[in-house]
Each structure stands twice: as C-alpha cells, then as structure tokens.
Length: 298
Ligand code: GDP
Ligand code: MG
Image 1: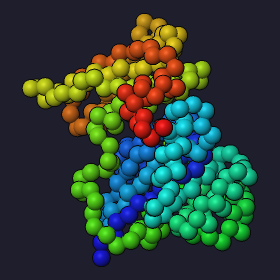
Image 2 (image 1 turned 60 degrees about the horizontal axis):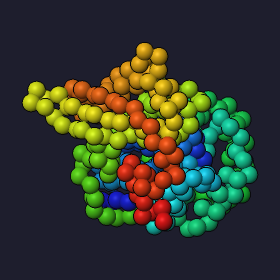
Image 3 (image 1 turned 180 degrees about the horizontal axis):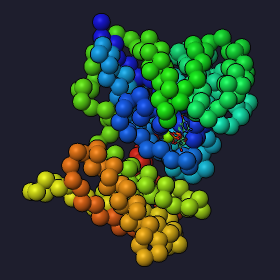
Image 4 (image 1 turned 135 degrees about the vertical axis):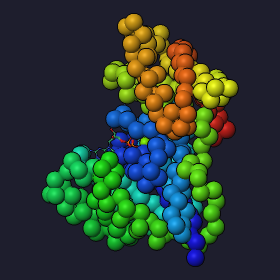
C-alpha cells in the first residue's frame, strides 16, 4: 500500500524548521539563517520513500504581523495547518520553552490533527534541558510523541520520519520521484541568493531584502547565465550590501553561485545588481512583483 500526505512544520522563528525540512528531504529546499523570519513563503519539501511520498510544508515562524509582508506570512501559516495529515511543532533546546509555546502546542494538539513535538538543537542542549521540556509538555495528552532531534547533525531525524509516515493516509504519488519541491528552480535560486545576502550582512540590516531573477538562460556552452536584483529599502542598505570595494557583493555572489551550481549540476555565471525600493514590504504592488501574492494579502 502506497501512502502519501502532507505534514506541516510549525514553531517559533529560528528554532530550526527549515533546517529540519532540508534534513528530511536531503536537499536544500528552504534557506536557513540565524535571523528570525528568514522563511517568507510556504515551501513544500518532498520526501520520497520506498512506499510513501511525504510533502513537508515549511512555514515562516509564528509571530505577530508587523507589516503587510508579515501579515501575508501569517495567513500562509494558518492555511497550512488546516487539512494536513500531521503537524510537527518544533521547539529548541537553546532557549527556554515559553508559556506561549506551551499554549500553542496545546491548542494545535487539541485540533485533532496528529502532532509531534520535536525538541531540536539537541546537539547543543543538555539532557536536563531536554527532560525539563518533556516535563512541561507531558500533561498534554493529545501530543503523539515528543522527540529530541538535531536537524543540523541529522540525529534522530530518521526516527522522526518513521513516526510521521504513520500519519500518512493511503494515496497515490502527487509529484514525480525526482522532484523535491513544488517551487520553480528560479524561485529556489532567488532564495539561495537571499540567504547569502542575509548571511553576509551585519545585524543592523533589517529583513527588507527581496531578490528578483531577471534572466535565467542556458547558453550554448552549457553555462547557465543568471542575472538577479537584490532589492533593499534604503540607499544606506545598498551600500552595505555592496560593501567597500564591492567585497560584500562579491562574497554573496560567489557563495550563491556555488550553491546554485550544486543545485543545477551545471556551471553558472551569476551577475547580481543591488537596487533600492523604499518601503517595499508595505507596498502590495511591489510585494506582488517580488512573488508575494497580493490577493492573499487582501
Ligand atoms: P527556522 O526559522 O525555524 O526555519 O530556523 P532555521 O532552520 O532557519 O535555523 C535557524 C538557525 O538555527 C540557523 O542558524 C541554523 O543553522 C540553526 N540550527 C537549526 N537546527 C539546528 C540544530 O539541530 N542544531 C544547532 N546547533 N543549530 C541548528
Ligand atoms: Mg525557516
């Protein structure tokens, strides 16, 4: 019997949801950074097992919307929780489990969709930290399992996968076996560039960075020619992204190119421009241009 279904990964920003999706899928589907709110869109990662296909929905962390972009992000989270076959609520060993998280876990666990709590970053947590978290959650009887894992080192990630497969209903394959995401290659490429832009910059730079791919074509010699814009909100940010003597933008570009080459298994020529569009995160038209659907905002 073949099984197929959807599992949504939820939890506070920065607990390691995207890292977990990548670990389960075995490919870099979703970008990761130390910054909260790195993931903006609902991203599907596909795990192809011998007798199952599991679609993982990576969500932006749960937080209070502050602008149109975060409103869009939260709407996406809510719709990803309804009608799925299972939920993983990720908490982390590296910061205290707060009351809010406990209440949320309780709320989701009681909704009826089977829920597993993954205690992530166990590579950095003490056994006591793990035990104390289990202790705080043990009264919520609806939780199917509480599993300590490390998404980064992949410890116990296979155990989690086995538990999740149990939630999947009988069903046919929805995606072909060689697909690992529902997003286009262009989208993934733009995300890789955004990840490097976020990583390479100091903490002062706000999250107002978007990436647009303007050209994506394979040339006769097999090299893929990509042109992209990094859009930021202020002139000062543009200067930061480019860096002294263009050192920063070169670093971003080299790191992104390496990841893209790995993804495409082809040589890549990457040319990045930096542009300023003020307050794009509050402008529905610009959001739409950058791939965040305006309709879902209204
Ligand atoms: P998200 O916001 O929940 O999607 O979190 P990310 O997957 O973007 O990860 C946030 C940060 O935590 C990144 O710096 C990751 O490298 C780090 N991280 C994720 N999983 C682990 C883990 O298992 N152990 C450790 N030590 N760090 C992790
Ligand atoms: Mg994420």
